Image (cartoon, rainbow, N blue to C red):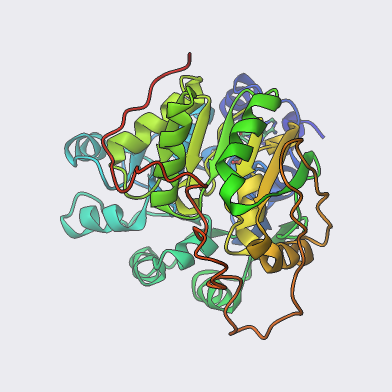
Length: 420
Ligand code: AMP
């Protein structure tokens, strides 16, 4: 079914077509009619399925014309997501007179406050900064008719649920609420039952499923050879843009510094970087100025960078869910992407858990010149047992930074350069 058949308003239909979309994705096919009815919706869909348009297009259709008071509030867990989702709204709304603003922390208040005073229809916000404006009277939630809670599972992980509940309670009772979460554990189901009334339900694929257009592989390696293997993979693969994941912020800095020294153009994204640095890193990665971006999970969750050709898990993710989210950065909306995971013998149990979680065995590959390290998981452990870590195998660096150390320590004064 084409977009034309979905009862979107004419300017919104033109907006989505000028954004270059041809056919709706499965979640768009199912969620758009549901949102257009005005009823509540709970949707679980993995990232990269096109869920932003699934709510933005019917919302813009329902709003119709500019009214200079906030009627739609979209809550996002991270600044990057708030910026990205607001851009999508603005893009789809380009043939309407509707106005949008992104509201998030880490930047000055002046510009956002000016936009708010000019009168907006749609606010896309992170919870903390939104509450600052609610408290100082710059935002009044009394006219909110549509509330979107996006990536609710991540909001839970980040400790936002109390603020989110407070925000929900400040919105009018008569409203439409749309709820998006990759997984719906009990704490989240409780928020849903507090926020939603008789919701329609849309589930696209199992939340844990891996996008089928992604090919993925494990590269077993000794801890001491990790950085060398990363460098060798980068030399071998034909990539446009590579997202490298580290478990820790310090690890991300260290990997980036070494890649920079090895002449790669590299950006870093993690929560200890200033908002301006984060914006610059992401913009530079999107524009192709940086060919590699090293990121931690929280910073990278949900961000959409068209054309990420490869994801490399320098460190195995801590939670199986994060594996799905990380590799969801590539192969988005039907593109083909590759995802590689470097695995040291200490990670064997984590890999077993990931394979169970996604219901697939991930093939093992080897690069010439690297010792073969068998991945042998131990017997399944009770949940509270120590997973993987601290087996103290000769004082190896636990999970980041690779082998050589290079005396880099905590130095942070390095610079990144653009594409060669
Ligand atoms: P999302 O899951 O909303 O973050 O979307 C993932 C990516 O898919 C984004 O780059 C969107 O621009 C793209 N996308 C979403 N819907 C479509 C569509 N119907 N056709 C083509 N690309 C799409």
